[in-house]
Amino acid sequence: MASELPGKARRAKVPLAIVAAIGQNGVIGKGRGLPWHLPSDLKHFRAVTMGKPLLMGRKTFESIGRPLPGRETIIVTGDPAYNPAGPGKACPIYIAHDIEAALALGEERAHAMAAEEIIVAGGGTLYKNLIGRAERLHLTFVDLAPEGAVRFPAIDWSQWREVSRERPRPTAKDEATFTFANFERCSLPL
Image 1 (cartoon, rainbow, N blue to C red):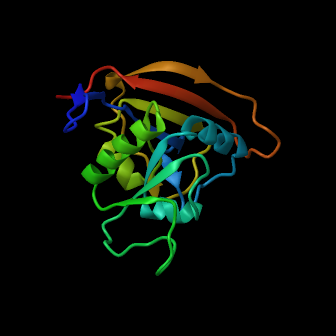
Image 2 (cartoon, rainbow, N blue to C red; image 1 turned 135 degrees about the vertical axis):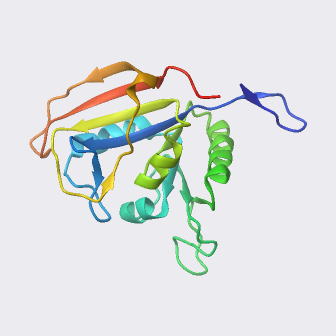
């Protein structure tokens, strides 16, 4: 399905992909950070998201603390006055005040960047609101069950097919073992 652009040729819709690391108990966050220390997963996240627009909630952005190099960040927040750089300062990011605006901006930026997908990079509320519209999942299954209040939404696995799985050897700095798995939606709801 292509979207109509006034005065321009039709462009193919860019797929929406979710990237997340998930504990055995569904936990993805603790407070304003990750509930584990996995440098290998952060390296994997960088490889999967490089050159793509990232949609993330305000709390997720604030937990990272800065725009990520080589990617374009779109912060989704309901606060019309939100400025992550502070009053009177500019920051190389985009702000969207609702999900539809974020998706439209993600589509625009993905075309400008020639990116093959738009990344949903967290947090829990954004994952919950967009999992039904995602076409791809890039998941890290972490072999820990940490405490944490932020959880990944339930996945109806009958709607997904696994396309790859890798269980890399953790480095000495990784505090757990993990598996990288990629999925594609069997079909999108109408």
